[in-house]
Amino acid sequence: MQQIPSKDIHILIVDDDKNVRNTMNEYVIAAGYSSRAVSCAEEALDLLESNTFQVVITDIILPAMGGLELTKTIKKDNDSDVIVMTGYSDDYSYEEAINIGASDFVIKPVRLEELMLRLRRVLKERQLTKERTRMMEKLQRLAITDGLTKLYNSRSFYSQLELEVDRFNRYGHPLALLLLDIDYFKKYNDAYGHLEGDKVLVRFSQIIKSCLRANDSAYRYGGEEFTVILPETGAEEALTVAQRIRANLEEEVFSPENGGNVTVTISIGVTEYHAKEELATFIQRADKAMYHSKQNGRNRVSTLYANDKQDAGF
Image 1: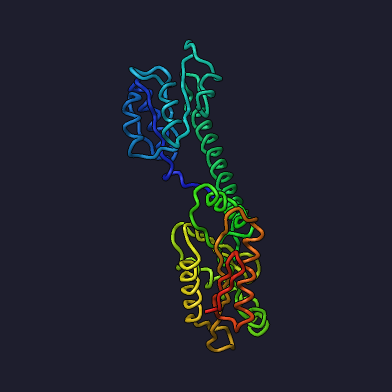
Image 2: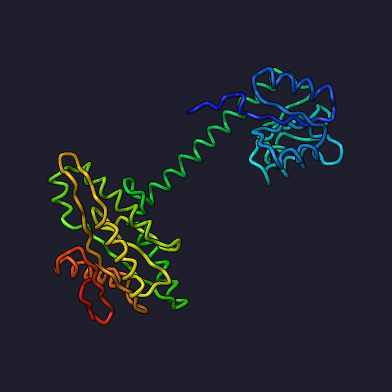
């Protein structure tokens, strides 16, 4: 776990006793942290509006807004941990402070050494929580994206297509699908190696994304096959998108090691969703259209409609 430099950690101390807050502030600064000290909750909230503090250390008894209310507000509006301080005679419990979101609870008069131990523990747990969150987010991204191309994967494709079909059935807006397959990709891999083939896949993925609108989505369907979902799009407009992708790839020049300059082409199938049809039927029709492009010379786009009327490829 990567350690955050102490100087990049900012602490805010809130206590209406000038001597207490100044002593704590000096001690925290001497320990290598950045620190500010204020006398009331209102000042603390003003600072939090324009500054980032990893930890706020606050007394419970404060003028106007108290420390517990301050803690609730911080946990609602800010990404800061809170250590609450209270005197022996104050009628507040550890459970009460923790239940409203405090990370720790300290009894006054506070021993500075104990405060530092608790501060470091809170900072360590905070960092561990951040690392766990980042790891979970990474795992979630990996679960829905292809590691090589960074496009969505086939699992995401089926989930999103179901959502778009449901939207079609509710609102009647057109929905088109592209299925794309790189021509002679096995021969390219055999001739130049899989690393060079991977470069083609990555670059082609970038080309696809550059040709799409914000609402469109692209997927690596498997191997050298890709799919594109085009919401709010009929077959004719989808054909234009497909032709743009095909032309852009055809113009791309690859330079594999010991291979000179090489171009790569794509065969694309285009279809439009038909009301109430099965998802599998929709996908199979796009697949058939793509194979029509393959059978008619490759490097072309073919459209297949639900009534089995098939256009010549382009």
